[in-house]
Length: 143
Image 1 (cartoon, one colour):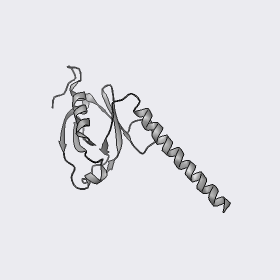
Image 2 (cartoon, rainbow, N blue to C red):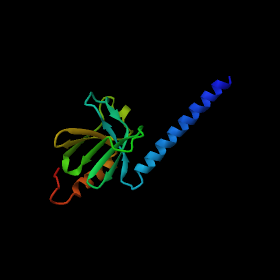
Image 3 (cartoon, rainbow, N blue to C red):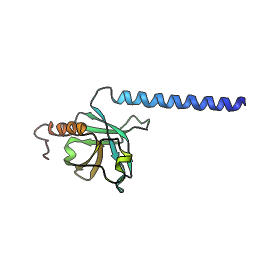
Image 4 (cartoon, rainbow, N blue to C red):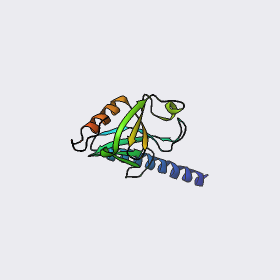
């Protein structure tokens, strides 16, 4: 009986430490502002498959995307403003409303070499468009 309680105690402590680590990581990523909830479709699959919940932030000319449930301090994806050639939006289809945050729109970002699919609020989309347009004139892309 004592061993089972010890194991349970260790498991609870580990879970609390993991939750604290996630909270500290999110706080550290958000420390300079410019962050927003943003899902990313990691694999090109059917609508509603391959999505991961995440957090995006602006760092100069880069938009960095981090997984929510990860302890990595580096971004999973970095998009430079100069790579963006345009964006289109659409409403979630299929199972996408079940795997993305409620009220998000799907943003298809056309990069030079591929298309990346994000899910974000319309307010965050307004911020992304403003960030794209605020590039210096020599590097500005037009939508």
